[in-house]
Image 1 (tube, chains in turn brown, green):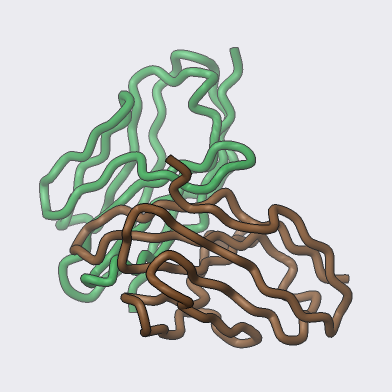
Image 2: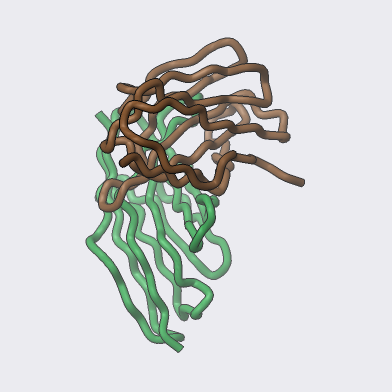
Length: 113
Length: 112
């Protein structure tokens, strides 16, 4: 009954370091998403994957890459972290049907110094 | 493009008070509308939704009516509880990919 699982929960990076945020869902959902949440900005879509094997840019893709490894897993990579990428990152998944709700993980809090 | 505007926060109420959180939207086509709630330390979870004009979504005592003529989807609850303290997000979707456009969110605090 895990739903959407994100790792790690917290991470501190120095400017220029790289890291990958992991996300896995066990609901057999086709679509997966990465959002970032910043104070006063709401949630903004970074990348999404409508189905296994496809990925598309969202509203704020610069500085990020993604991999849809299989139907369950969708990872987000920061190749060279910048302080502007300090944020809380949420992974979500949904069935690929009109009006299907998104199911969110509990987030990764990333600080870049 | 699509956008969602929520009233400025934060909002602080006493227990059993009436709650209204305003939400208006701009969208191409005919959007579906959602309210999501985020409790401290957790991800967002769907609170309610409405998929066409004049639909009313409801859950846990919360209600919102899809008003096409005013492009609004205001959230209401007749009597709030301390456990309703959370961040509330209004959102819309216009495609089969379920990509959501979110408002900025509003923090609700309910005092005993």
